[in-house]
Image (cartoon, rainbow, N blue to C red; front, side, top):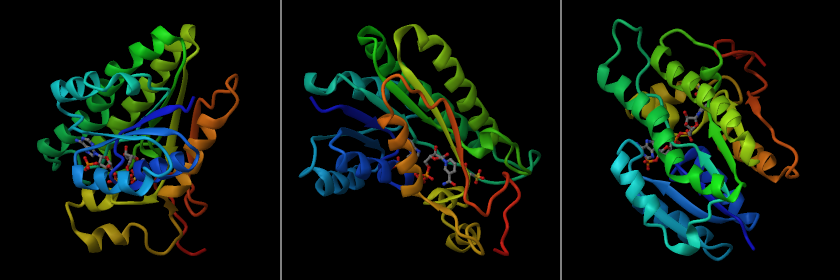
Length: 251
Ligand code: NDP
Ligand code: 8X3
């Protein structure tokens, strides 16, 4: 029987690329995000390959998360792979200038949203003693960079939660993978800089950044490993990037 993957943040970037790749690999998909029109469009792209179920909800809204996941039809309740990908940076400002609205957004989406979705899905994996959780962290969850403060904190939290999950779910044979990308050209910077296309584009100028499909390939590699193999923690950078702050623009 085909597996079922639940992918958050499937309307764009890494999540969408992962959904497209998983569909080509025959994995049935529950695709999530707030923008229902994009989910419908993605569904129409892949439904000739696999079964697709759409769940449109805001991961910040605990009630909405629980309602959406608890209302899954019976044939969709057995989630084999959870990709906790939804997230974004909001703003890039020194700590004394950052907006509390941005801080709330990052902590509510990147940390609490990931927890709410996990809370709704993991008990089923525990009862079945099987499953794979892939959490998308960041190089920002390994190194703090100037003005990254709260975004970095949210991704350090994802890293800690991922380690905690791995410990707590070890008795149940559930695999837990943390993937930590460096600079990937998606809508990420457009969201961070609130729609300023010029500023967003400048982040990726002068070197070859990763693309969403690079991360999708890595996610697929981790879920496609033999059952006794768990990729626990993986950082992936563009070749031009040596650390969170060092990017060679002269290659
Ligand atoms: P995108 O902006 O392209 O995609 C973000 C996705 O998250 C969208 O599908 C969006 O869907 C979803 N999302 C955002 N807020 C919410 C919300 N409140 N409720 C539900 N879904 C939400 O960015 P990326 O693909 O780059 O980002 C994906 C993940 O990768 C994030 O966790 C990000 O932190 C991480 N990452 C990105 C890197 C990069 O350089 N791009 C590097 C390292 C990590 P919608 O708006 O429709 O709700
Ligand atoms: C996204 C990568 O370096 O822009 O998490 O924070 S970075």
